[in-house]
Amino acid sequence: MAEDPYERFGAVPSFTVTSEDVADGHPIAAPFRASGGNVSPQLSWSGFPEGTKSFAVTIHDPDAPTGSGFWHWAVYNIPADVTSLERGAGSADGSLPAGAVQLKNELRQPGYTGAEPPEGTGVHRYHVVVHAVDVDRLDLDPESTPAVLGFNLHFHTLARGVITPTASYDDV
Image (cartoon, rainbow, N blue to C red; front, side, top):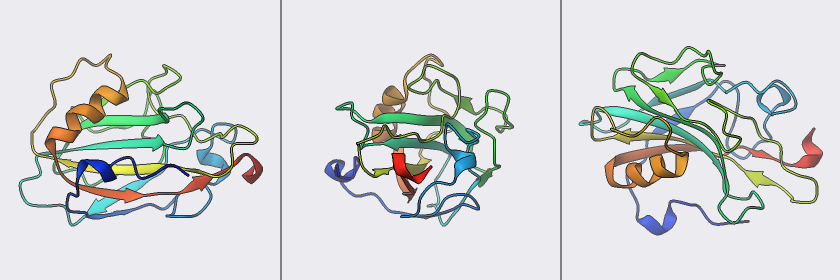
């Protein structure tokens, strides 16, 4: 499997991310997969550092057979007083907090797209990451890609909380 995509950029402090729907090291259930419901998981976070001014949430599959991974979800400018997203918040008409911006995923659709590894590609890891950001808002073009968001987060992340559930073709 591919390495942790953040490892080579140096360590930042971590904080706690929990979910009612996905768990670290466990297969993603059908409702949160592309073929089973395509619903974004509930997420909560705590223990982030003082000075956090906003949050971003990303879900990335570094094991996708693309050479660059696959971005499933990217949301930024989540206000600092928000510490959870409800199940389904990543749908095109989801209930994101005021001011939050949801980018198009790799399928060029706004919002979340669930895991669906191709047959023969083994077990994939899905880095569900909440980034504690040092600015109130990132001034990005809302048509930016999740990779552009990731580039900007590299320079503004104070800390990161991660859950890494898995999926394979055979899990369905």
